[in-house]
Amino acid sequence: MDRVVTNTPVYDIHTHLYDPAFGELLLWGIDDVLVYHYLVSEGFRQFDLEYDVFWAMSKEQQAEAIWNALFIENSPISEACRGVLTTLNLLGLDVKKRDLPALRKWFADWDKDKYTNRVMELAKVGSICMTNSPFDEMEKPTWDAGFNRDERFTSALRIDPLLLDWTNTSRSLAEWGYDVRPDLSEKTITNIRRFLEDWTKKIDAKYLMVSLPPDFNYPCSSERARLMETAVLPHCREFGLPFAMMPGVKRGVNPQLKLAGDGVAKSCVESFANLISAHPDNKFLITALSRENQYELCVMARKFRNLHLFGCWWFTNTPYLINEMTRMRIELLGLSFTPQHSDARVLDQLLYKWSHSRKIIGNVLTKKYLDLMETGWDPTPAEIERDVKNLFGGNFRRFCDGSSTSVTSSSASMKEEEFAI
Ligand code: RAT
Ligand code: ZN
Image 1 (cartoon, helix red, strand yellow):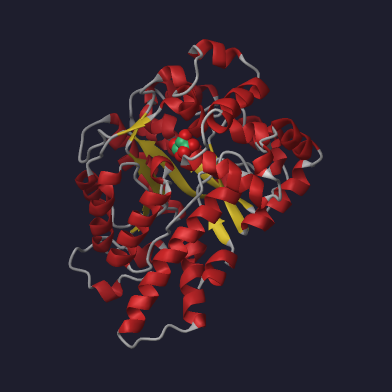
Image 2: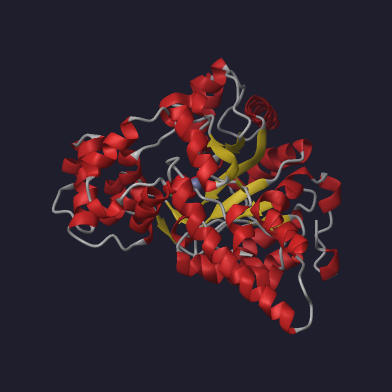
């Protein structure tokens, strides 16, 4: 069991990593690991520093401040801190020396391409889905220019600005030659769909995605709901692509923390059920940020076969909650979900995020197979291998690839045994 869970390659279905062709956008190495925004917010709980003083520092100085505050002056016991040590340990480095300059020296000897191979091989990550945004000025030029893709890196089309800030986004689209106005006339919608089509093709998107604030509700006469109904969901149907929704993030709760300043609140799961039920020909992926939403989401996924739950997102990507969520999902959904994604922003993080998660998922599964064995059912090694492969990417691939007609029924009276996709 342990061997299978440790060695099965995963498809990491949501990350913020980049194909190496994006150059400096693919972050790696000890300084980027240390300035990860999860650690920045923990650092500020210990620093005796004003926000602007920290932000004016170089990346190396920030990394040093975090190292001193979270690793030297306190024991690095949080999940994000422990993750740095797991990563270094898996790379064969001696963490107990507490020697940041020596660590830097070790990383300086690597070349990015070789290091990418090494990390993916060590973490046993076979494919990585990037988060690609046409609205990101840093990545857009590379897409526009074109490049030879590394087949291990797939794409998801991120459309937050389209759905969360249409007024400003309409200006960008107009600048890029799409005939749109702030109003949502038929012509504007046609051109938004043209924009989505162009980018879906350009990046070969495997799904579209958006993070949503806790106050998302549906049905609703808002601009956001109209954009979903008339542009995004028809586009997803036309291309057979899932629409991934990530509810529960409160952006900029403390703007002084920049990327580290976002918070969480409960979302209205009923609204998502309404949206999914009203669009039986669409496929939906959901990962929610609030712990309190997880149970309702599991029940909802039992009702809608066009919904696939995935990952333990961001603040829920902590051992305690991964364990709770994975166990609850298995007990309510069997094996018909994707238990984890890494959300890695720095390549090296694949090492700790996957080794920590594999261990927890393995423990939950072991307990479940033992429960089965108590009934006299004897899971064979081949069956266990099949199950783990499905959890680590097989389910997701099938959900994405399945023709939209195979997931049309949203009937709440659907029989449980018909659930498997
Ligand atoms: O987990 C994170 O790094 C967050 O900052 C977010 O990027 C989040 O995962 C998202 O995709 O919005
Ligand atoms: Zn993310």
